[in-house]
Amino acid sequence: MSRRWTFVLLGAAACSGDAPFAPSTPPLPSQDAEATEATVASYSEVHGWSIILGDAAGRVWIAQTDAGAPTVTSSGRTWTATLWARLDSAPVARDLTLRMGVFVHSDQAGSVGRVVALLRWVLADRGVVLASGDQGGALRQDPRHGVLRAHGRASGLSVGRLRFEAISDTPMPTAPVDDGPPAPRVVVRTPAVVSLRIDDCMAADAAAFHMMHALGLVAEMAIPSRRLDRPGHCTQGLLQAMVADGNTVESHSRWHVSAPPSFGDFYLETVGAALDLRGRGFDPHVFIQPGTWRHGPTLFDGAAKLRSPYFELLRRVYVATEAYAWPAAMRLPVTGRQGPDHWPLKVFTPVALATKLRQAAADSTWITFMWHMWDMPLPELEARLRVIAALRDSGLVTVLPYYPALRAVRH
Ligand SMILES: [Zn+2]
Image (spheres, rainbow, N blue to C red):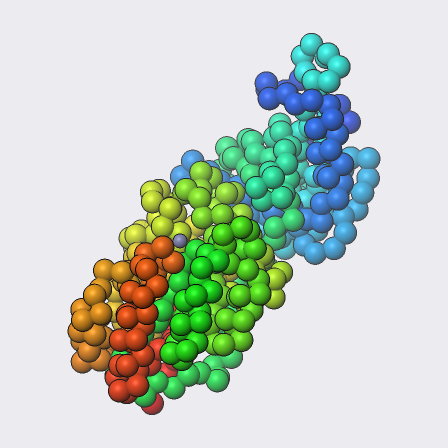
């Protein structure tokens, strides 16, 4: 516990006593007793919690339970926990306790079948409260993500008034991502490097794979992890075959829906997608921003947004993020952790594509192209891939997926 917490600790109010039935609380949506019962039952199965705290100035903290089983007492379930104030860095406090409790609350009229379950929590350091969600938040199941969630008011830390979002069983990594050992790296001997990317994981990507395999080309697959194996989308088997052939599988959110409405939704789409892909045996290093995140803090289109807690979280989980903020051509080897922004492959005729690649060779740059399966009829895609393969054969360009290109060195 660092010195800067002293003021916080003195200012923090003691937690109100827990009781199995809470006194009256602000109005909350009611749900039927059966749904509440199911929610409370799944609450007792939770292995760990992440609590996102945000203040009005846009600062974000995350308190997360450590691995291991909680201590269960009449006042709740207590884990050891860790607190982060910068999401791409080391924690500001360890060996804390996070006590969670769920309280079944009858509505004002007390009529049978109208109840809510409230999640309350207290984050403490050796018995001294650091932050708490005393009033709690309605505990609900989120079927889209398969987790329990609650949100509401909180207090504590240095700021007093906070909002919290609690999310079950979706831990962020305890340490920021490690870019791995320096070797072996791909050695580039051509003037230009070209990366190819297929977005959104469609069943018809299998046809592109066969074409690329025949031409000796490889690409990065940008996968919305929860669409995998659904009708019309690509399959686990296709991705495994592609990885075995030298393609890479990277994260493209979970659901690829519109911009996340809260930090918690962003957390589930980014941390959750990495957990999903790891659970399927892949090893994602890159986050590809969905084109559907068109506004707000998750549209990473400028330098200020790259200093936000949103981008800090991405830097914790992924080595690199492909976003609109980067230039569209870079020299190799790169100096930081980011590669160039992409060009849509469909906007180049084969002739224009050949010109673009020759220019990249003249400039000694790394450029990337992206397509969706629906962008072009297959023969048009094939014509473009043949141009790339021909320039590869002539010794002008090396074709590498984004992550190995990011780590490549020059001869
Ligand atoms: Zn996409």
